[in-house]
Length: 457
Image (cartoon, rainbow, N blue to C red):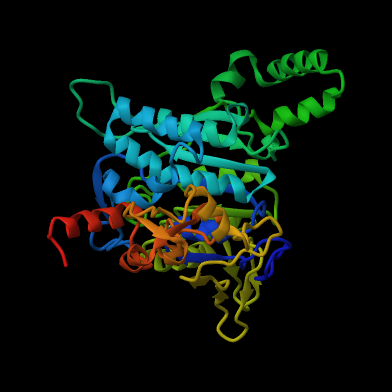
């Protein structure tokens, strides 16, 4: 089934959109409950700097996976106890046990996981890819946001590879936390069945083994006929929550050189299991576009977000390569395709790539549940400052008259803040001008201290 490049029934962006921007800003602009599946492969708090090798498709792509509270001031200013006590204390606790780097990393992740939860449909799923550096802390964070009852699986993806170790066993697995938004999560287990191993089939013989499994299954579930059970046995078994049949990428043709690239087969399994043809898949850390390509191959709509402009070039290169692999042109230039929505140039015989909308513009929410500022927010904030003709400024703390105050964003719009009640405060005229539309509150207070000490004009 072909899917046109048009706005879906409730999404406020085009199919095949790739944003080059901070994913928090983009996620906050996406309509609520319009996405069917989110896969995110964020930095792992590995304390490493990643750089794609020269000569690879992704040469020039890089990111710094080290964290400090100074780097996440905007996020931390939103994650105070009053906003969400459970989330706040979860992050503080992680900082106490694992250090400031973990607290900073979780501050970065918390707001993004919250937005992922908001944009998922009630039937939607989130797959959060991580490794032992932060997997247990991320699970606590996701339990707060999604509810501990909504975790479906902690999937362990196992792989092999070289590595010299002397003080521990080889660390060769990642963790994928699979959450549903509600109990109505879409899950198509029959779509991802894998063949039984040769050992299982040979243990008692295929026919005898089949009869045994069929007999046992029919006895325990009378609603299924023997024929239904036999058909399922022929398709193979549902994967366990430890995956050993998908190899990590080394020097395969699929490899682009992008740091931390994941195999296409891994994303194909996730997408087939947790979405239906035509559903919308979003990857907030799109990188080398593995999720986008896998969604395209499976006939799903997709969108990706990445802060590195290199992501667009790699996405188009990978789509072009998949077109060549999956589609064929006969000697008389008649095309046959295994991918939905692709057309062929009748003159050249070349396959035409689908249009990918690359943009840095933040989507504007159109859903009825979008938050806006109250028309009385100035009066509300003034009342919250206390009583009397003069009340303290949230910046300098000096008491000012009502007419001296200006309504200001706590987190600047330029850094992902929203124009909603929760992000608005009163600042005196001097602090408002000093803060401008760039500084966070922490940066403003630092600037005021420097001025008091005569370190700045």
